[in-house]
Amino acid sequence: MQLRYSFRVYPNGPQRSALARAFGCSRVVYNDALRARETARAEGAPFPKTGDLSKLLITDAKKTDERGWLGEVSAVVLQQSLRDLDTAYRNFFDGLKGKRPLMGAPRFKSRKDNRQAVRFTANARWKITTGGRLSLPKIGDVRVKWSRALPSVPSTVTVVKDAANRYFASFVVETDPDEALPETDAQVGIDLGLSHFAILSDGTKIDAPRFLRRAEKKLKKEQRRLSRKTKGSNNRTKARLKVARAHARVADARREFHHQLSTTIIRENQAVAVEDLAVKGLARTRLAKSVHDAGWSAFVGMLEYKAARYGRTFVRIGRFEPTSQVCSQCGVKDGPKPLHIRVWVCRACGAVLDRDINAAVNVAKAAGLAVSACGARIRPVLVPAQRGEAGTHRDGQTTVAGIPAL
Image 1 (cartoon, rainbow, N blue to C red):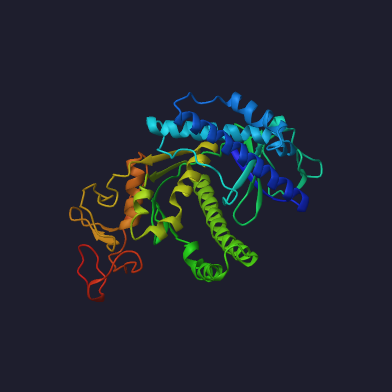
Image 2 (image 1 turned 30 degrees about the vertical axis):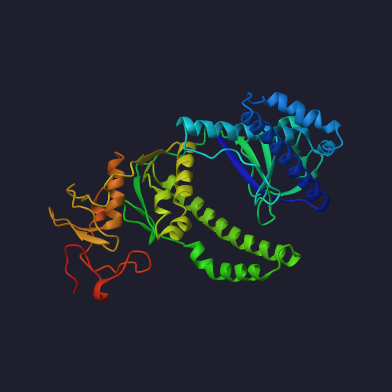
C-alpha cells in the first residue's frame, strides 16, 4: 500500500522566493485550464483535453510576454497542476454518478488560500542529497528535519506551505509486505464519545483531551488582537500568523494524540470494531464544537489504514445499530435513553450497565468479534451526568435509569 510521510522543511530566503514563484505559476496554470474548460462548457463545445491544454497553456504560453515567467519554474510542477484539475473534475463527476460522496465543482485558486502546494514527480529529477537535504529543480537544496527514515524510495514529493507559514515535504512511498505485527488473541470494540474520547469493550476509558477547549482562551485573545488591526497593514499580517499558529498547535496536538492512541490499539488487538458515526449530522447540533474538537473521523481513518498496514482486522458496523439500547448481558432491547442517563438497569436480567462500556461491547458483538460482556457490569452507584454537554438536571439531582434519585 502507499503511505505518505510528511517532514518539516526550512527553506532560506531565496528558496522561499523560488517556492512562491512555483506556487504562483502552478496556480495560474490551474486557473487558466479551469477557465478554458468552463468557457467550452458554456459554449457547448467539448472539454479541451489535457494534452491540448498543456501545449496551449504551458508550452506556447512560455513564448509570450504575458506568460513568459512560467519558464522560471520546473515544467513538472505545471504539468502536475493540470493533473490536479483532472482529478478534481473526475471526483466531481463521480460524485454526481454516485460512485463517491458528492463533491463540489472545481473552483479557482487564490494566492490568499491558506494552503499552497506544488508536486514533483520522478521526471523532475529531484533527489535527497548525501547530506540529507532535499534537492528540488530551480529551487535548490532545502534543509529537512528528518524525524524518521523513509521505508522505501519515494515516488513523488509535494512541498506544502500552510496558513502558519510552515513548509512541509510530503513523500509518497510504497510499504513493504512484511510489516504485519505478531498475531494476538485480543479483540476490541470501540465506542467514541465526548465526555470520554474512546471507551473500549474491556472497560478501558480514554479521557477526551479537548485540545480546542483548552486553547480557547488564547485563541480568543489572539483573534481579538487580529480584529483590531487595520486591514492590509503589516501588523494585521503578523496578527493573522499568530492566530494561524495557535490553531496549528491545536491541530498538531490532536493529530499526535490520534496517532499514539490508534497505534496502541492496533498493536494490542488482532481485530478492532467501531461504529460508523454520522459526524456531519452531529456537527449540526449544539455539540458541534465538541464533535469537531474530538476528530472522530480522522481517528477512525487512522485505525483503518494502520489495520490494513499491519495485518489486523478492521470492521465498521452500521450507524443505526442500537448499541446503547441493547443489554450486552441478555441481548434484550430496552429502548432509547437520554444522554444524561449514563448508567441503566436492564429490565429483563437486572444487570446494572454502564452506558458507554455496554455500547462498546455491543459494537464488538455486532462486528462478530468474540468479546466478553463482563466489562459492562458495574456496581449500582450514582454517576453524575456531564453538565456541559449532556443536558440539565431536574432539581439538581442526578438520575440513573431504573434507580430512583436519592
